[in-house]
Image (tube, rainbow, N blue to C red; front, side, top):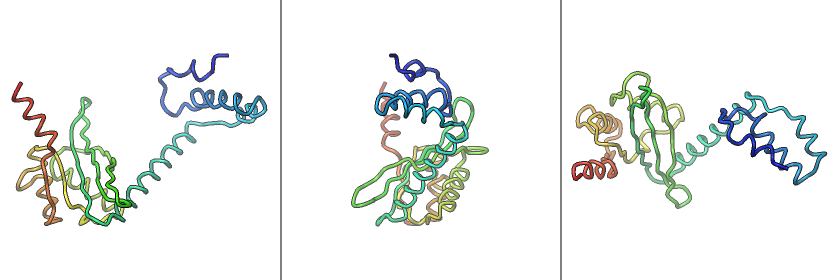
Length: 190
C-alpha cells in the first residue's frame, strides 16, 4: 500500500490545506498504529482552513509570549541585531534578532519581522522597534547594545537609528556587524 501522504507530498499548496495534505498522512499513521476503527473516527474530523490558520496564529502568539517573558526576566541587559532592506517586490522590511540571558544561558532568537509602511529611514526603523517594545510592555532601557549594518540610516552619527536609540538609552553600545565588515573587505579584495 502506497501511503496517501506520499502521493500528496509535492502538491505545493498553502499550509492551510489540511484536508488534502495533513489529514491523509495522519490517516496513514492511525491505520498503522491503531487500526481501521480509529481511522473511521479520524475521518469524521474536519480540518478547515480557518482552524489551521487559527492554530498557526495561536502558536505564533505563544512563542512571542515566551520570548517576551524571557526578555523581561533577563538578569542583564539585552542585545538586538537588526537589518532593514527592500526585497525584489519593493517591500521594505526590518528583521530583528535578540540575545538575552535565561537560566544562566545565552539565548539568541528571532524577535520579529515587520514591514516598513513607507521608507527605510532611521526614524521609521526606530519607531517600529520602539512601538514593538511598547506594545509588548518591554522597557526600552533593557537594551544594552545594538548591532546593525554600516548604512548611514543605521549608524549615522546624528540621525541614524543608533543615534536615535542613544537619545533614548544614553548607555547604549552600537556596533557595526562584523559579518557586514567582512563582506565589505572581501568585496574589495576580489
